[in-house]
Image (cartoon, rainbow, N blue to C red; front, side):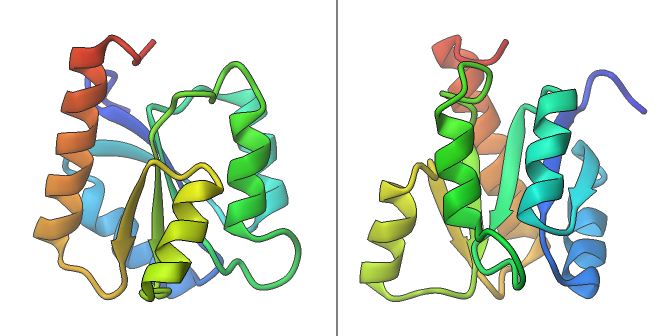
Length: 133
């Protein structure tokens, strides 16, 4: 793993989506994946991630909004960028997702360029603000 790259946790229940998103961002980040909310919480306890990409509808178990709420209650992830990666596109859905603690939002489908630009902009903003560890 390249230590200079961002460390990103990708939380996505769809294997196909995990593979595509991981492929999109491998050039700019070291990616670790979780396929459900419980696995995501375990991985965040064991590791420190710079950014979390959070699917909202995780199928069985707790959803991405609940995972985000739990992460925001921990000191370790209180200010970590959590980008909602979801097919929910209605304004009311976006508000609920952001109110749950996600710092940013990208709707599916998205391009590699769109996702990478968002991640790099978020990382730059957080580095400049001094919020990255």
